[in-house]
Image (cartoon, rainbow, N blue to C red):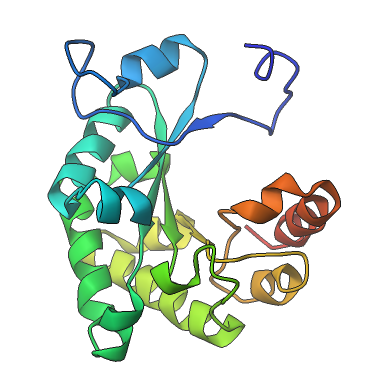
Length: 207
């Protein structure tokens, strides 16, 4: 509450996870209804650590997304490949499987409450980062996928953000790419000056 109350638009709070059902005996989880009651408007779903450590499947993440959207939350849905998957030539099939699971659950109207976050797993917390060209290639693929799988309207409107060792040194070049609409920032968000630089780089982008 102390964090939320002083915030003014456009600043908002997001939870890092929510459960796939409502209030009940789900120890260790939190229902979207409770987050909404606390004044939290967003939730991050499908983060690579949830997929890897908690073994959350694309189907479960899709169900979580659907439930959160229909109970008052907007969602940041994370997708991304491991280094092994990229090197094996599985990048596009991995991303498509993750995206299709969500698309199969949502209506076209639901997408107004979805932000897609591309986070190459090999670049999270490692100091490695996808080059601006690599990131743009994937973001362009996601936008094309949205046009073909959902609609041209959604493809144009949906925000696709990048997460993977974003810092104050690479944010400006990444933000300049046509299909990179912002960032999901990890460790750099704890460094005030660096985070301001990242936020300003993203703010200057067209979306």
